[in-house]
Length: 88
Image 1 (cartoon, one colour):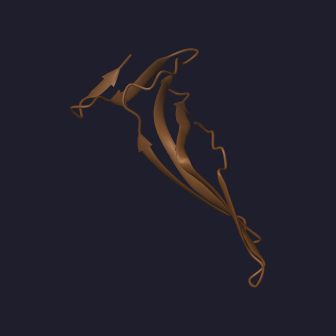
Image 2 (cartoon, rainbow, N blue to C red):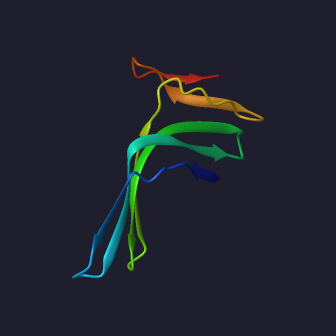
């Protein structure tokens, strides 16, 4: 499997007392999981945070309905708006 996410950090919060920095990408962005054994791609919308110095990465992902990505070799799998699984 291969997991790919894109996140543009819109907010950086620094706490000088605790000496921490939190990078926040609150605007949902593209993500997907490629399963090599059956050549399928599962699209997601991703938000997340990255914290220093702990190096904690927290991701929230929800299935994308009819996302406009095209797998190089294989099928795109997603739930449509009615909740039914579709394979393209």
